[in-house]
Image (cartoon, rainbow, N blue to C red; front, side):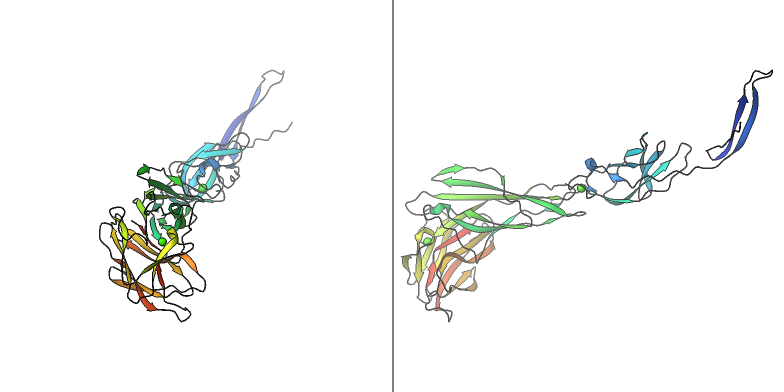
Length: 398
Ligand SMILES: [Ca+2]
Ligand SMILES: [Ca+2]
């Protein structure tokens, strides 16, 4: 019989070997001693961030869970330690089937190189595993409140059966920043309150669908109506937006002040509602039907220097005013003056285009008076065959 004494732990080791037989003096014992050499321990597999610890987008290893769990495989009987940037942040025994699962202590926000290292029963360490880059992000984006603007170059969508349901494009814009990640999504919500024939209906916030993919979206908002011999319909809109980053952190909603959409039709030569606008004309203006115009008709002039001025309007919040007109082959050039600043608007187009937003001014200060006036110049684009200038409506968000 041959017996081999081979200590597996590092350093001096001893033992006894006993022989038992039926002879006198049995058992006989032989002392054993020797020096053990360290047995290599295999490196664990590269750590995997447990999907339950990978918040927001799955599989991107960007998470807001700052005590994440990592899993992998390692030699059975070992203890696996997880290191973040080389510093131990947790350990656990490897299962009998050679798997490990370690939940770390708190990791600071930022990017970390995560490695695993196994130790056997006597503390012999394996090489470190391959590293996994993980980003901890617990900070939500910061988002600004949305701003709503009317747009020159857009057009109304007329509802001739019910002008109050005609719409005007409004561009809602906001901004967002995220310190350590990137923005994954926005949630824009709209609330519409309606005053219809003296009855107020208060809306609730609902998501604008589809959800915006950028920081701006253009929506067709119902204009309402302030027209003689019709029920007054005034819509007020409130927008709020929040941003969520790829780690799943969402900002609070940032809300804009409620604004009212106020159409001031050309027909309103005196105010129907206190502060809700009218148009003051000077010079020679006529009225006429235009198919596709708001309320079906416009004021128009070819007289040089004839003016149409937005009067009797109260601006409650930072406001925009749009001038809605007709473009066409016989339309001329007008100027628009806002608080003393004058711009030129050419109404020529090769084909007739009613209900066009030909001008919009932005950011009129709330609580202040503002002068908005259209002036016919009596001039025209060389392509035009006329100098006619139409006032279909002013529209304010106020
Ligand atoms: Ca993630
Ligand atoms: Ca009109």
